Image 1 (cartoon, rainbow, N blue to C red):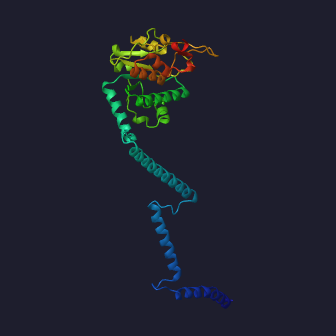
Image 2 (tube, rainbow, N blue to C red):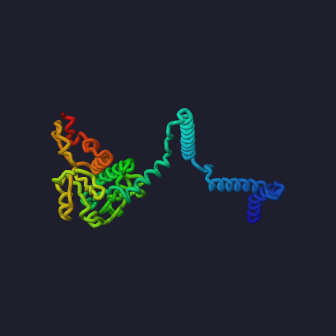
Image 3 (cartoon, helix red, strand yellow):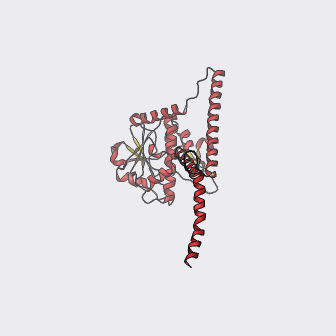
Length: 316
């Protein structure tokens, strides 16, 4: 019995020993078995690929990522080609028309816009957007107001004589600020003032003019020594005299746009007529009047046909 066990053990162990002998016999030039050499080569290959991956290669990227990378490279190449063609076209255009003033670059125009806005801060007309009444507004109303602020700022950048804009009663932790950042690219870098205080504590009360459609006094001119206030209020329930009441509490002068003086109601199917405008529409009127000193032209710029008003000379 013991002998059979020993014999079976020998039969089991002998192939292993033979395999080891075979491995030992097949050695490379460096004295290592070829199997170990193969493992070493694979390991070096993985290390090289890992190093390549660390430097930004797509060796280990999936096919989907590689496809997206190729697509992005095509887009970049197309943009470069387009810029090159546009540059050659402008060069040829200048050669054909030597007397025509060349177009300014976008960088130059941005610098010019920045210079005009900063100049307005020191010597230009001033406009405040009173944002202290936004606490009861819904998310939808806040989104609409954020869009109006974006359009107002865009119009001011394009103006030959821009206003210096101040957003008052505005905190960076408010829902409106979050909505402005979400909807408006680069909002945090807008060239304007953001103040937590309300407009009545920032400026002398005698210099303030609150523009509200509920005022009895029509605005006759834009005085550079005055600070004009627009109520940043989007209220779908249309609460009347909110901004007028606030101005009255601080004994501040009020004025309305001269819509009644230069425009008349236009008959429409809905019989709808409203003098309530968005803040960007009011701004377009003020900005146009500042450049033209023409109220009919300015009102035409901001009072859309949907408000139910047309210029008097249009009827005549």
